[in-house]
Image (spheres, rainbow, N blue to C red):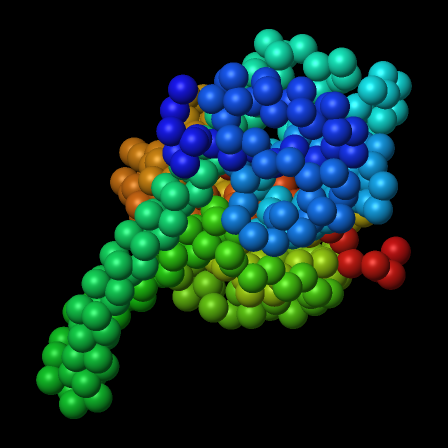
Length: 362
């Protein structure tokens, strides 16, 4: 038997004293440390102090029943990760389904079977450990990303400041300064993408959807990207049939910048890039198409993976460091949307972004 002070604590909430004592005996024998309360109110009071690793919660109790306690636990950010196993003499399917839909980890029927109790507690605790480990890894990843972004940002600022000063003083070759400025801007975008990807993955990126005027947004893109298209003899086309979309304007602008920038890199010279919008019921579809070489079949399932690159031999480019499309996928999901690619090798590529349509555009 482990030292009682080091054993995993299980909170037992049941109004029947015989059931509480029986569960106490089982939990003691299994090496757990039980804490016993007799009603729902006492269960919430106990959770205000030191947290248990798991909760065994009876459904039918005075003061607050098990459903009410489960709802309070699920709504509390401090408590919601504690696995709750509902216990009851009820054998009706609707009660079991209701428990699971409300966030319970499992259901344990009365009378208690110690082997089933052990299996369900063990499974629930294993899942909690995995979640805790994943959360720790995400925190470590965030800390590492912030450190890298900070360390890269300082020398990048020096490069940008010196390039601007040389341009003002006229002490450098204009063409070379233009290349330096564009490269520094590209590096700044990569750094920003690394930070934003981490925020999207951890759920800390603020998402504020609103009604966005697509025509106005695309007109800005036309003015901004036409010089880059002209450099390669590309025709930039915008066809806006859907006037509005319900999205976060900053995220949407970043997503379109990534998709259009990607098309500029891969499109064959003297061809076209087309951005079109249309509404389908409750969804606004934004498509960014190019007449490039397409994506080989072996790469199509992975183009949205972080750091994954597809080399375009015909265009002679590699698409940055493979963060732009990853950002697009996570940003689309954060706005209740989707993104996918429609491509045939040798026949061009279309990235299709679907987001909720703005109301009142019919």
